[in-house]
Image 1: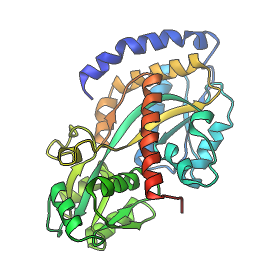
Image 2 (image 1 turned 90 degrees about the horizontal axis):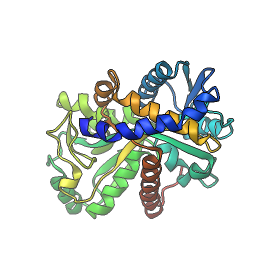
Image 3 (image 1 turned 90 degrees about the vertical axis):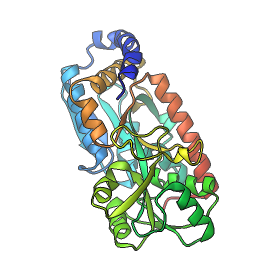
Amino acid sequence: MQRKQFIRYAVATAVAALAGSAGAQGGWPNKPITMIIPFPPGGTLDVVGRLLAQKLGAQLGQTVIVDNRPGGAGTIGATAVKHAQGDGYTLLFTASTFTVTPMTQKTPAYDVVKDFAPVALVAKAPLAIAVNKNLPFSDVKGLLAYGKQHPGKLTFAIGSTGSAGHLSTELLRRVGNMEYVIVPYKGSSPAYQDLVGGQIDAFIDPILGSAAFAKAGQLKVLAVTSKARVPNQPELPTVGETVPGYEFYSWYGLWGPASLPKDIAARLNAEVNKALSAGDMPEKLPAQGLLLTPGSIDDFARFQKDDMALSQRIITEGKIRAE
């Protein structure tokens, strides 16, 4: 994380902490807080959520309990927070699939804007375009040229319908003006197995997933989907260096129920920003392939709105529906 960004938000964090004093004076928090993660333990989302919970617990003087509630593509855990009391003791920590899932469902289980209060954008996860090592190109320009010369021949894996990797793949199809076959998988692990084995040609997934395979020479990573090159792998170009304007992320955030009081939301936002700049967080999260994103609640709300608009356009144009 760049030092300038932390300095930029230092004043905002202090102001937010003062704004949250009303909630603190009212006794919040005076008991443990539950952070619901709507996916199983063990993934990057869970790792980051537990790190954040530990930091917040130490700063707030109360235990932050991580409660994994997987199922329904994240809807079970999200719905539990939707119906929770808005007292600041039940929070949702999840990934950007949370905002996308309702767009792919005929009958959405929740409304992101109406049912939840944004608290903090925690981190962005740039994606990487990984391809089979035997393909006759090593950069995005070569990929696009090959795709146009061989329409419908390339196969792209997706780990799940509506995932960031899926939407990023659909976006690349459009901006690259090429056609390829989408092959759905149940998660990233089997997709990587087939990518390395040559059963599929390409896979767009968070950077960390492909790093070990690339280091071992089992596949090629062509580029990252972030706006700028990532600090821990600066040798990788961005897609935008070949396709101007291309930018896409998976990302992680913290929400409360829609009725979450503004003063408690402000206090939580300040504490998240503090946690992102404290101790080992600035080292541990980038090690997970993440970019730290301290900012205000308004910053998060604007980012969420813009990201949802882009995702909705991709889903509509691609006619993406939940399986």
